[in-house]
Image (tube, rainbow, N blue to C red; front, side):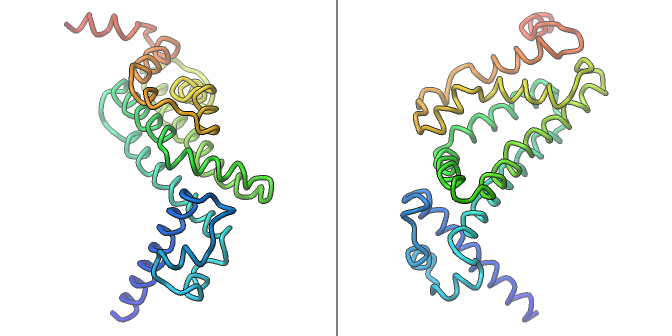
Length: 217
C-alpha cells in the first residue's frame, strides 16, 4: 500500500512538472524558458525537478511525447469505431484538422523546428510520434476498408498520404509553422470536401458521395 501511495505521489509530481514545463515552453519559447520558472510553477524545488528530468531538453522530449501520444490515443478510438466508414473518415478528418490548427500544436511545432538545428533527435521524436505514427494508423484503417471491399484495392500508405494531404494540405501546414493560421480556417466545408474527394478516388463503387446521399432519400 505504501509503495502504491509513493508511486502515485511520484506520478503526480512528475505530471505537475510536465504541465508546468508545457505551459512555460508555449508561453516563452524553449530558449527563454528556465528550469527555475518551471519548478516555481510546478511548486517543486529545482532539485526535485532534476530527480524526474535531466534538464530542459528532457522536459521538451516529455512534452512532445505527451501531446503526440494523447492525440494518437484519440485517433485510435476514431479508427476503431464501428460507425459507417464515411462517418469515421469525417470524424477523423475533423479531429486531425482541429489538432493541427490548435494553438498548442502550432507553438510546439515552431519550438521543435527551432531546436532541430541544435538537437535533431527532438525533431526525429516529434516526427515519429506524430506524423509517422498517424500515417501508419490511417493506413491500417484504410487497408481494413480495402479488404472489406468498401475501398478499391490500392497501396494503403499512399491512400493514407492522399487522405492526410487533403485534410491538412501543404499550404495550411506552412501557415501553422509560420504562425499565420487564419481563425476562419477552423470552420467551413473543408472536412466534407476532403472526405468526398478522397472517396471519389478510392471508393470501391466510385459513386460520388452527393449521389449516394440522394439515392438514400
